[in-house]
Image 1: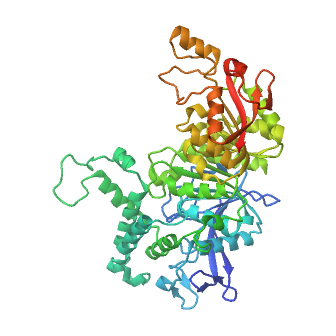
Image 2 (image 1 turned 135 degrees about the vertical axis):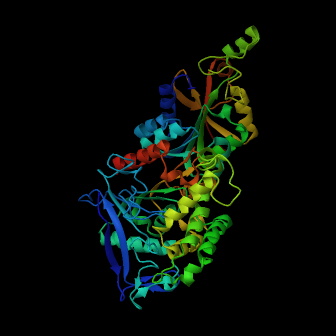
Image 3 (image 1 turned 90 degrees about the vertical axis):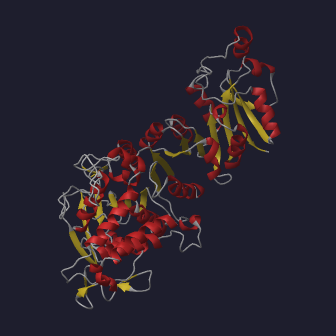
Length: 372
Length: 203
């Protein structure tokens, strides 16, 4: 297990240029690594986390004390085997676990950025990750992988820095956000901004934090990560610690209690402004933004070996969206594989115990490594 | 199901494929034909398969494979992406063999197709004398559980290709394990060949 590291990668003089036209410098990246980089520097795997993920992919989270969010997948003798590979997981810029983001200090004002933080994009996040990869002197990543928003970053790597990617595994993701995706994110943002404690984003030095708004945002999002079937199986209409209805607005049903718990525990580890910025980046994401809407054009320089994975019960980033990637890569003659895992666990499946998913990851990664 | 025996089928296919060509095996199962052709013909290959566990087996062997169905997913490939498309023993299980055949010769310069010959004497005998649907080594399902939807005879296949402006370039001689130039229908084959194995292309 490795500890968290923080590195400063651009400067005021040589800032990171952002899609919005503004620039950021210095840029800090907080990241964890696992395993050892080999002499040829050919065994690096970059893991891109999702919206509310962070760099603690396979080690204990400093706030929640829970094990890493992908401990199922990353570790010694696991699908991403840290005995063999050098795993890098950076916190994205805009995040709130140490990388430059709205709750960090703006060097200009010596106060938290708040809403003075520039609106960033998925492409900006990847440009920042590229600085980290350059800093680590890695010229080719053996594999880039991630689910959900992490999958968007994987697609961006394939499109923007194709020569840096030997293989890639985008999981449960999309080439852009649908109106439904944007609508759900907007619901979350409005919930945060409707909390009077949000104070137009200037809450850091006050006693009032927008925990209610952030917590409701998380509750709404959490529903979208699960399927109707899995909710039904887990909770049904079961009552929470009682046998009769309470005829009140307390959490009568188990599902209510569960969601409230999800919401409340989330605010301890996440920043409300980060949530606004990151969801915005996801909504703005469109891999064809610089190719006149053409997916073929967006991936025309890609040479990597790719495995796309979707889950049958994922309605947030459904199989049909993932298949658009497969279809495009096929049309380009790229070495692409695709598998739709059958599960009732919804979008969250990529974070859960899914043995067939682990097996597919392991098979692809091991055989690609053998052929290197 | 396999065509008489797999090794023989693989060998016949391998003998007709140009080395280093780019192929797709539709219904590639555990990828054993692809492995054979990679080894013997140095092909660049990928597969399409519907069965999840077989897909995972392919992935672990380093074979690129897409989960998909011959009936619906061949449309995703552009014209002439491959040198060869291969469909062994699957045509009779597709919903629309006519469309599948058209797609096979659209996405590849040449297609290799095999299927059980419903005109084989043993099948005719089973129907004629026993009044029972045939079950044998190439048709190893009972009528109530068969995945096969569209049986055809070798002559039916030849007729369909003619109707679709598909050129039959070669036909396998299963006794001698070689592909031979196609010279039209043969009475011998229509009765005595358990399977049809053809090399076809767009006219």
